[in-house]
Amino acid sequence: MKRLVFALLLIVFCAVCAPAQETVTLSVMSINLRHNSDWWEERFPLIADEIARLKPDLIGLQEVEIGVNQSRVLLDLVAERDPALKYEFYEQLKTGVDMISGEGVAIFSRYPMTARKMRDLQHGRPVVAARIQVSESLSVDFFNTHLHHQGGDEVRLPQAQKVTDFMDKLSAGRLAFLTGDMNARDDSQTIAHFLSSGLEDAYTAVHGTDLGQDDMTSPIFLAQTPVPQSPANRIDYVFYTQPENGPRVTEVRRAEVCFRNHNEKGLYPSDHLGVIAEFEIAAAPAAAGPVLYIFAHQDDESLIIAKMRSDARSGRIVHAIWITDGSGTADPVLRDAESRGVMKHIGVPDANIHFLGFKDRESWKSLPEVHAAVLRIANAVQPVEIVANAYEGGNIDHDVASLMGTLTAKAVPSVKAFFEFPLYNSWKGQYQVNKFIPRDDVETLYTPLDAELGRLKMEVIEMYPTQAEIVDTLKLMIDKNKLKKYGEPYRPAPAHDYMQRPMQGALLYEGNARNPVSFEDWLSAVGPFLQSLK
Image (tube, rainbow, N blue to C red; front, side):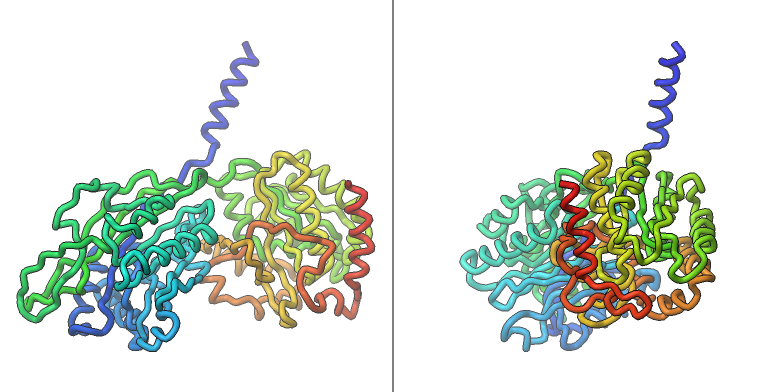
């Protein structure tokens, strides 16, 4: 009976402690601006009026006259109407010879854009993409395009195929949205291709497919006198696609045709009406199990401290390992005490702190012993997630931590995710701090800095008095504007080949005057060690 009661209590406890699934509402708009034709300086205040009224989170804009800074003009007009409504933007000119027109497409986002990309669709048309960090647990991909107005499906279908190919490569397994003036109606092969590729039409998700004139978006006749408007075509869209797992659209709450507002003369905002859709999204909760951080030195944690605190305050069990004794720059006792103080400051209990004590700058000489010690802790903790130093050639102990993270993630069945974070490296011969060596196969993620985490970053960096000289250098080298805008960087750890240099050219640790180590030294230790594990 006691066992049954205990089991029931355990089930209730686990249910209470399971992370709640975050629900996010996201509104997405599409509007063609009609570039700088037809009294644009009179029309743009009308466009700003509607944006200020509807307050969309993401906007895909077509026919933006980049040559006269229309994005900035429009955002200034929006700010006049609602100072709290702030957007960052990404714009791209048409491609090929068409770029001389000065026209292009743009994305406006109320949330940070952590990555931006474009692809040429030919015939002068681009598609642009941005990764949007909506919240700590939700990022989405947002695409915007303007297919060609001539040539019918013969021209637009290949463009649509390039769009979906771009989305498949960039956003596989991710929640994504696509807006645009497609210059194609519902009965076209172009729209049929989008739908057959897994995209869902937000407007028909709400209104069905039996649509009438009130659902049409084009054409609108622009004139300085009242003109009867009878738009006959629906060519402006908000699509979405979602993965089988992870964040999902649970409901399209509303979808409306917008920008019907005109001035007293009868002038409309554009020659298109726009579309806005509002989505309810179930963001995947953070993994409920423990997370294990693997560091080389007592201060490495300062560059991933926001994520550590975010994990701790969400209720996750956080463990941290430091491989070396830190004796290369200060008394190991003092260095351990500094990291203990930082961990206490962010809410990690002393019982979850593990100092292995291998000699600083020489951990590569003891790989079997380091591996055994890390694996022993990991097997006891049973983490669902591991975070470790990136493999970047900055400090040889950092690369040992990366190697241990990789091996542990493979060896411990409970591990479902493995992330890495950057410290410093010499990418293209330039010393850089808190920036990854670029790779095409993984995308950088960010822990956004809210008020608490922003303060914490500044507080923690002052909590290593023995490392004052190094810390001062880091403070100068870190891109504070980017940190404030995007947050603290980390990424899924790629499949590193530890028998190859992390990058071409000399590694930073090879030029360390106090303790020069060559990559050949690394290979002499790593090669036999990895062979022994087979």
